[in-house]
Image (cartoon, rainbow, N blue to C red; front, top):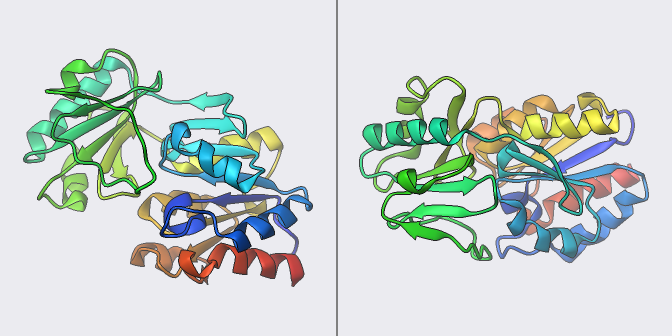
Length: 267
């Protein structure tokens, strides 16, 4: 880039965080240096806000967070700026279709009011530091009683990408299915991505996408890679992500974010 970016967006798991779920000290130090450049810092993650607050405190200064892969956007203190959810009826229709199409699927709902409702046999593939107080029920589809932000699909022995292929042409208008960043696909309102969340923040801050740099490693990062002026993939990223990135950084366990930020600061 010809000048220092005005917005930096970081995926968390596999990118900013080490494989132990912590923010490396070198990464934390260089982010503090970046703040002196009056750059907007954004965490863009599939995690709900409740699972981001610890990281925000550990870093010590974040301006905005895109949570649940774009379904929720908050400021660095957790104040809600944007939320996009499915109505209860639309959520139930899309989830029932998933039950019909994906053999043995187990479902988990992230509710707009902050609750989590899981099928009893939903087995989350979450990072070890996740502590979610979920209500386990015989049938999450029946139990949802308010708007739903996302459905996570535990496909058991069924290939998650195959499940996405089967569902994407069948879901009701207004919903879509995509990779969540975990082994579980997710169903959301159409158009909800990390990119849509970043676009909201860029509008608030009067920043062009061309002045943004996005860091990521998963399939759920591809939309923000297309949106940002520059995309940086960690060397541990999915092959499709590596192919789409403008720059490839060292892995998350090699302080890859810090290496790239130091280059931006001191080049």
